[in-house]
Image 1 (cartoon, helix red, strand yellow):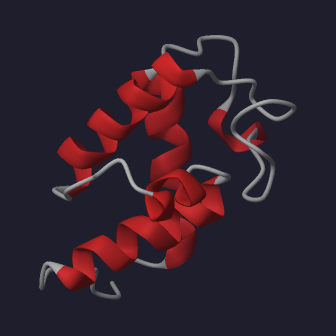
Image 2 (cartoon, helix red, strand yellow; image 1 turned 90 degrees about the vertical axis):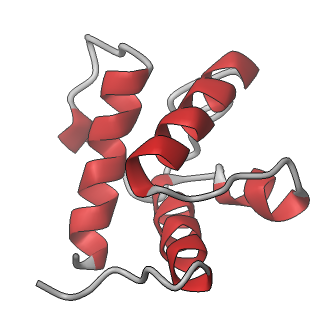
Length: 95
């Protein structure tokens, strides 16, 4: 999976798992903030999104600074997911 495909999947996952019916996944910027000024997500959204990411990408998500930093943007989340999969010995392969 390419980095662009991963970012696209994460955008769709954000919209689907958080039931953001009025948001088009393609309208979400890779670099915009997910919390605060960006998508304006809150802490409950973060928990739901973390659970959805863990399930979809088969990764462990803990409550540490690295995880909090990863939830800044779609690009940061994509890097985080790819890193967690690589650490678990399940890196994404280019298709």
